[in-house]
Amino acid sequence: MDRLNETFAALADPTRRAIVMRLAEGEATVNELAAPFAISLPAISRHLKVLETAGLITRGRSAQLRPCRIEAGPLKEIADWVERYRGFWDQSFDRLDTYLSELKGKGDDNADR
Image (cartoon, rainbow, N blue to C red):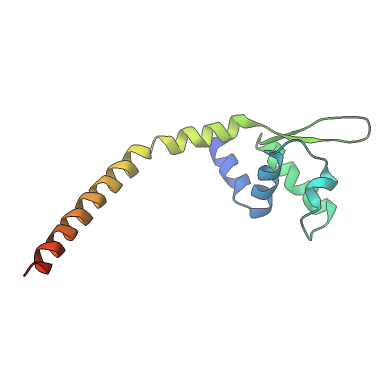
């Protein structure tokens, strides 16, 4: 659960979520990741450090570049955690659908009068 908490904490920030979304398209350098944001490179580096500590990204070495890559493991753990609650939501939506159908049926009965 600690790793899941760390992953959620890392993804709580919109800048870090945007970085992860960008890395889902493929690896990128710090400069490429920083381009869409109006924040400093050191600030981007701090965000990357949080993501790296949470295991969401890795940074490689390619000559003088350090391309960042997404790591799927922690995201899969989140997906698995959310999946456990799918049954609850499916049942809730099914009950809502039944209720709305009943209301619609009552409305149709009143319209006939």
